Length: 228
Length: 401
Image 1: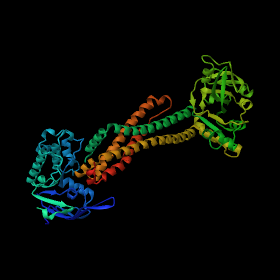
Image 2: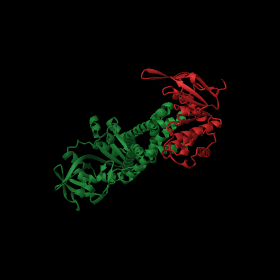
Image 3: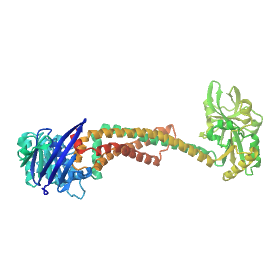
Image 4: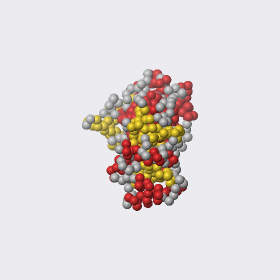
């Protein structure tokens, strides 16, 4: 177990809304190895987005331990978490989350702005990544000038900018038609083939079943019976 | 994030909401213009007054009753203390001061001067024959007042250039009669135009024999409110001042008078004008404050509107200080551009418009101060919204619709 890339130990996340406490996660313990291709599934309200946010260091657990690459990150300060997100994580969101006033190329280069300046990657790499996702001719376009599938491919290029080991995708195909969804999934599989750890959230069985491993959540707990 | 990126981002954000950015800047433009213009008017008035003092003759000393000079505190203060300067005092000064001097006593009141149906407001200066020499007042036509006018209480007067042109447009008052307080006076001389001085506008004055004031205008008996003493050799003026002080202190047994030379008068007015200028600048600074609050307001709106953008940037690895810097650069850029525009506006309006009505002088230091202050306003009023943005939790910011 100690060789796991990600090790969650009894993770709980409790929200208090209007005096009512809600256990979004009620004690989740899972391990994910390097280079795994994992889908997190479950009905809405099962806690899969919360789990994704905690895995991505976008949110901290109320209690429990999160060991990432052998380092306990559950109690880190916000700036340390920011640097983990920058170096080790790539994010792909359902709503693409590109910055509207920037071109595709500028969006892809954005993580570089927050990187340690010694990281010597640049415009060239951003161009290569956009070429790779088939957007060679759309680099100067702004998000509004791109289709949903194209925007999501820009977002994937952006998530790869800092060459992270983990790619986290929250309903990456949720806003796309079947052709767009298939393209995105193809890219994710390809990246998995190159050795990236891919974790994505979906409620769509046909999408989820394409992963090598499915983690099912129910009421904030891992539905062990269905963890295949 | 390096600074070039930050500035590009800030410019982009400012341009994305052009109208809003412009209106926000306008608050700073007006504030900065107000500060610079009010400082310019203060500085201009100060220079004007100091130039007038300098122009009154470098060897002149000003003797007034009261330990605090009535030049600043006004005649009321001296009446209260009962301190006064009499003709005997002045005679004592003339005889006992060992250096060559010319003494010119004068009392001034506001008067209405009439000729036929025309009336004008002016000042009546009750003086002696020495007034013209000491105040460097030239006669354009006719003659000065003479010792005999003073001794015999004649109703002869010398009028200023404006009085002549107002009462006798296109003609000369010389030899004619004018009426003051129901009495007739004969114009025996017309002074050359001299303009405004810190003692009043000589061009709007009527100079009457000193003795007439007490007899016909109810001026207090044997009391001189303003005596100008000219040291014939300007370099001796400090020594003359000391001798006058000695003579009068012995006569009065106390120092209930003040002798000011040009230098101390300059200092006195300088500091008074500086207070005045500071007050003006403070009023201007208030409008700058309002402009700063405008910036804070718009930055708060901007942070709310861009919550999702902040969330995205944080997800990509932006630290609190990156977000803080981003918004601070934006607010200081807004106020800095506003400040520069404000400087341009104030320099233009000072030189093209206000100079016609008021003396102004835009100083380099006021410009530097104003621009520096405007950037400081941007940073100060930007800190709260920027901190608010920086402290957003990434997951909450991303969820924001």
